[in-house]
Length: 331
Image (cartoon, rainbow, N blue to C red; front, side, top):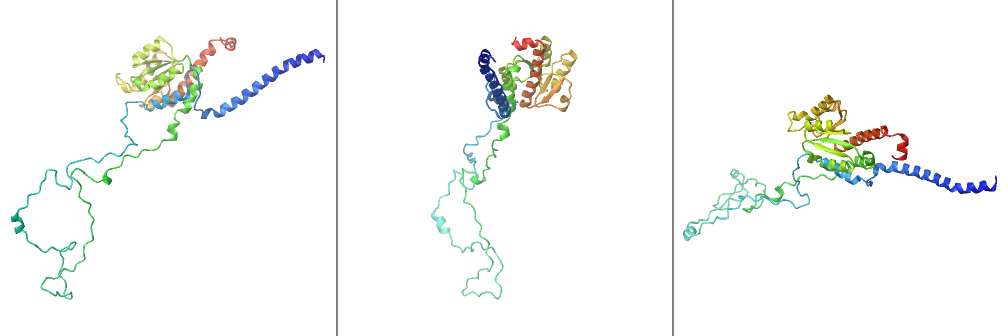
């Protein structure tokens, strides 16, 4: 080889080395990311984070009316209820005055020994009395019984008789990690979901507000309607990637089957949009509806299904709408 060829090879050799180093680094990073992705708790994206998605999913598990307030488990025990009564005399009780006549009428009497009930007289072989007093009955004394002191008039019972508060179970590991997998998938799929559209049909949208905000943060367009009529009108006006509907709507005539009625009308109108039935009154009949992809009351399962359906439809639309040259050039 001539000296000029060696000089040219030396010039391009660093470029080939950097290209090889980049491929090796990419392969190592992909392997590490694949292994650590299930345990990720913080992934930053331009649209949504894992913490935000997990918080919204956990809030959606409380879907429904406001729950009753829970007692303060860290606070002191409730005080003993004060009720009138008890063993003590009432507060306005006053004993009668003692007069001299009462002292004169008082007579001393001989009391029976304590804990000695009436019994048979001693037998003939018993001890003979040494004086004129009658003999004491020879019976077995009763066992000693301990009684609690009388309660004040303002106290209804002893502290030990007050029932303890209900046992509070400790935090569950499963509940603390609930929704982490779906939140991680949503954070990593935000770029794929960006630009998608969802029609949400429910008569109580305040229960779904955490998930609606989450989907909108991920780049999805979420339109909300509250009846089957408005849903059919919205589907006729524009195309959606997915329909989410509840099963029961009180304001409609067929309230218990409002969700399946909407799916039937979508089939009659020839609307090919897939649907998810999301609510607490999901029955086995809804699972076999031809237009229902899934019927669930789990927010985590809802998020994963939205990622699958909307992601696939968005990728199909982008693939059919541009050539491979446009996708390679980023157009």
